[in-house]
Length: 288
Image (cartoon, rainbow, N blue to C red; front, side, top):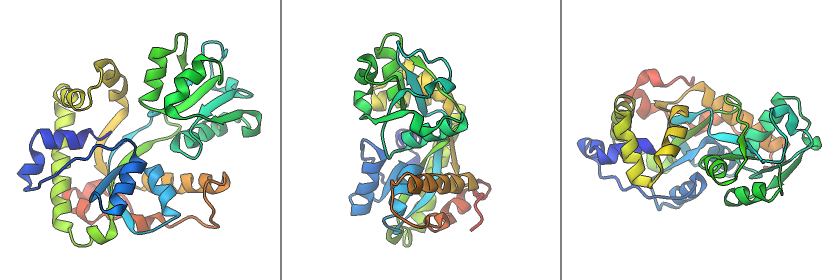
């Protein structure tokens, strides 16, 4: 998901903008978000779900831009003995997911779309790294999780099959910062977004070279890169769909008891669009 940053660094786009950028590899957007809040970093890259959960706790941060979206990041993988060939057959099955995360939101949305009552399924909290064993050992019939775990399970659990439904949930990865940092660094933000815009143009026009950068940076397998590449849309945006997704996730989190609040936040308060408007005015579709 963070490929534009790797490209901008490797191709020298940060330097061309007069920026010195240090990329701090962190496992998970929620961890990157916490580093940003403590001041260990100036920015974080994280999914909109991380923004939603934290918006119920504090309001001192904002999204500067979305830089990638995917309608196929979260997936359903079914076990070899589950007898599941279509989504409707998930009814009454044991499904492993990460409770309170975007994967559960994806699962709940999928069940709702196919008219499957949640009380008729057995949803179990399974850590991502344990899902392969859970499926292999028959502890669950299916799993709902984000990449790269579906790919890993499909390649390590014989007989497992993909039961993915695109367009159920569009996840985004976003550039986020503290409001106290944003307020005094507009010029740097514009330069940073210019560098990322150049990187995204490079990804669009030089995909093979961009893939090489990704492979070298993360030590990935080309098969996995080929697997995820078509579903990742790299483009700087701030659009109304992001607001709607945040609002939908917030309603879900309240209904499921994931957060305790009578009302959802106003997510316009968590958007700072001024720098992106200077870089690409047509990329901003939010009415503030």
